[in-house]
Image 1 (tube, protein in one colour):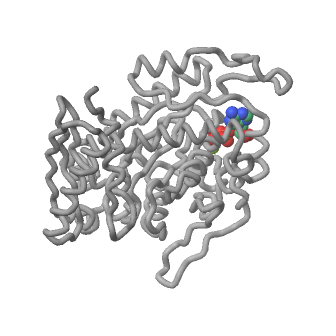
Image 2 (image 1 turned 30 degrees about the vertical axis):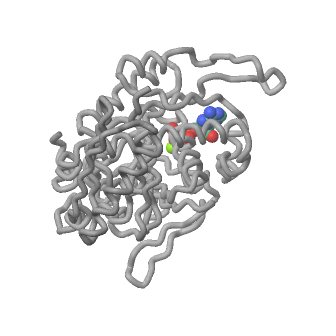
Length: 373
Ligand SMILES: Nc1ncnc2c1ncn2[C@@H]1O[C@H](COP(=O)(O)OP(=O)(O)O)[C@@H](O)[C@H]1O
Ligand SMILES: [Mg+2]
């Protein structure tokens, strides 16, 4: 059987950069990957590496692919020693808010409020953390900031360090910051798009996130001006759109996907929340309270993966209210497993997008903050 994209990704995930100890996929250094007809071709972008090191990396990539795929694969690898990361900080307006150490920005969005967007954001962040990734979580939902509550940090304020950078809070190893910690939510509800964008940019640009694999952003619900300005002021890696199964919610999710596509931000996939209910005394029985099959149909129609379907569970609601995300409260439970599988799917989609998306396109987006492809 010919080696697949996933075989090659698995191989490249064993090639570790010595300075950070993280692999080259996780660091988003692999670009333009194609795997077809027994041939893998890609570029590795190294920052400030000596030429001898570049050769060594190329050789290690070749070895890893031959070993992992056990196939007589042709490997065309080019190592470029470009200063991509440095280019991002040459003072342009869009780039200056991008925290330098953050590899991926993943937005969690929904067309409607109350569909479980924050619940998904919190547990996705927690599940990624439990898999060993460095994770931050931004509550950008100015209308209903709920991340601090769900993470048991409701009354805490972040501190400012000696360099006047905001230091995020940390819970269960996840770094957290909420708009609600900085501005009075009652005042924020009358804000207009540009004010929110400014606040978000400050938030990202003036916060010391450190080195993160993922910064998850819990966006306000809807597809209006504010959402649009937020997604345009960041080079988003991708978006996860949450919906419940009712037709009204799905219609709004469709608008959400369209919004991201309009600004050329990849949609990583849909999450169907509150998909079914199983009574605790009859766990084998599934009641499709809000309807069945709608999210799967929408995923097909829009050609975006259905990343997860999550049941209605009282424990999930209670864990949020009590301030310990379910992935930490019941790490061996069924819900933690579902969120773990969601985290794997998101990580895989992000890796594929990063590695197969042409390098020039990514650079162009980072450079200009524009929406051109
Ligand atoms: N799958 C679920 N099962 C039970 N309760 C849920 C589920 N998803 C969300 N909830 C609850 O529904 C309410 C709204 O969820 P939330 O995540 O705050 O939605 P949003 O951020 O979209 O407004 C919260 O009380 C939350 O605990
Ligand atoms: Mg919310």
